[in-house]
Each structure stands twice: as structure tokens, then as C-alpha cells.
Image (tube, rainbow, N blue to C red; front, top):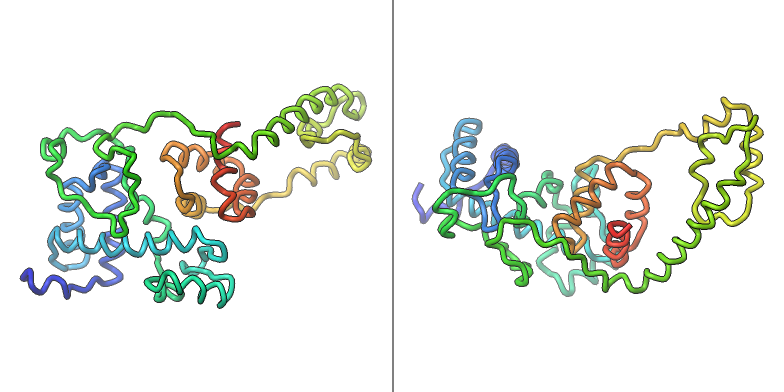
Length: 307
């Protein structure tokens, strides 16, 4: 295929799916560096599309497709960081609160017009594919990569933080800036005081036959008075007591949790991974995160990391 015709090259849905799965595999193999994808990654994608789709493409086609994905990713990511927008994981589309919110957003972002009804099947994978990878699985020893000659996929909207040195494949220093949490410091101190009071009250917890029930060990933080409801629960037969703690939670998918966290601007990779691990283990924490408005999510996340 000639270079002049390459700009008219069309990607099928099947080719996009093969591209997506191949890039995820290459990412896990350590071929996704801060400066871009290694040559082995492009070669693997070209070979996979030839074998599975019976279509011959070049590295240039892959790079151009990634640029298109970058454009889509950054436009949708900006929308999701705005109040009134959310992601519908059932249909893989943007969900907008009202027509008024949509019309107001388009005044300053006309490039987003086509995304109201656009389906992006691989949205949950785009953060791994499109974000600059600052923590590769293994450090590159390829001379071409070390000299910076490997092809770099450009960020279509150029939303890179210039304060980070993208040539350094090591993790960023673990130095948390809590300046954004000043409004929450007083609240944190109050929580610590309540926790101390809670420990004192543990000595006075109600008992059944001289034994403190297991569920009372998780006495609500901040409870200053003995609850009559708690006394009533203690008086119930054991089978009825178990019913309160055995109600299963509806688990969110790991892909949904990662997708929602990737929208939060300004998180370093280690911070994102730490809070991701917390949400996987504690569904209630993720529900609390989703209930917050967008402008409060980052301060809340940083507060959870500090605990």
C-alpha cells in the first residue's frame, strides 16, 4: 500500500479488537515505555493483524491508529472530569445528565460533538494503552530505546506534565504533597479523637452470655453513645444476628474501578495503584468515591492514601 493512500486506510472492528488485545499483551511484556512503544510491540501488532484479520499493514498504520485513540481518550477523559458526565459501562458510551449540560459543554468543546452517541468498546483498556507508562514491567536494554531513537506515539492533546522526566523509567519518588488536603486536616484530627473514644468504649460493649459478639468489634467510628438499636440486635437469637452481616455486596468490576480512577487528574501512578488495590478489597470505599462530586474525588483519594 502506497504512502499516499495510507491516510484513507480504514480499520474494521475486528482489527481494532486485535490491536487492543495485542497492545495489552505487549504492555504486560514490558514493551510499553515512558517514551512510547518498543519496536517489538509494533512488529507483534502487525503480525497479529496479518494472521487474524488477513490484512497487511505497516508500523505507520499502527501509529496513526494510536493517535486516533489518543484523541478519543483525551476528549472523553476531559468530559468525564466535568460535572454532569459519567460513563455507562453497560453500553460503553458517555452518559450526560441533561441536554442543558451537553449544550453548555459544546460551547467550549465543539470537538466533543460526535461523542454523545459514540460507542467506545475498549474504554476500560485505553488508560493502559494511551497513558504514558511510567512503570514498565521490565527495564529496557535495547540500544535503540536507550538512545531515544524508538518511535514515540504522540499525545494528541499534548496534556503532558512537563515537570516529569519521561526518560526515567523508574518510579517517581514517594513524596506526597498534602497541601491540597489542608481543608481536611481538621476533619482527620476529629476522626482520630473519635477513634480514641471508641477504644475506650470497647471496654463497655454489650455482651451475650459473657461473650462479645463478633459484629460488635466493628463498632461504628464516632459513636459516642450506646445505641439502643445495638442492644436490640444483641438480644436477637444468633441466626438472626448473622443475617445482618451476611448480606452480600454487588461487586464492581476491576475494569470499571480502574476506568473511574484513571479519570482523576493529577494522581501519580503509585497513588493510582494503591487506591485501586483499596477499592478492589473494600467495595464500600469505592461506593463512597463514586458518590462524591468530581472536584472532591482527588482530595478524598489522597486522604485515603494518607491513612
